[in-house]
Length: 159
Image (cartoon, rainbow, N blue to C red):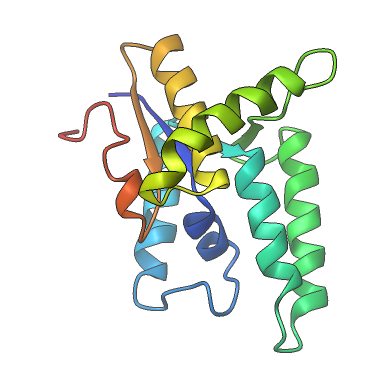
C-alpha cells in the first residue's frame, strides 16, 4: 500500500545525524527505513513545524559541529524546497497572509496541549488530518520516535 510519511522532528534530526538527538543503535534502522520508503515510492513530507524545531535544536548544538550542521540543514531545506530531496516541504501557512492556518493551529493546540501535545506536534497532526482526508485510500502516518501522544496517527498501522 502506498504510504504518506509525515516526518517528525525526532526522525529528521536522526536523518541529519544531529548529536544529542540521535540514537546510534537505531540510526541504521532509520536510514534503512528511509531508503525503503524512497525505493517503494512512498511520499515523505517535512512539515514547516519540523523544520523550525530542527533548526532550533541545531542552533543549540555546542560540540563544535554547529556550523557544519547549520550548513547541512540549510542546504537540505533549500534542496527540499527545490524538489531535490526525497521529502517535500509542507505545512507552510497559506492564504493571503497565512493567518487562517495559524489560527487553526492555535485552536487545535489549545485542545491538544492539555494532554501534553506541543505546538510542532499539533502542526504535524494538522498535516496528518489534511492528508488522510485528501487521500482516503492511502496509508498516512506520522513517522516519529519517543512521542506517546503521536502513537495513534497511522490510518493503517497493520501495513
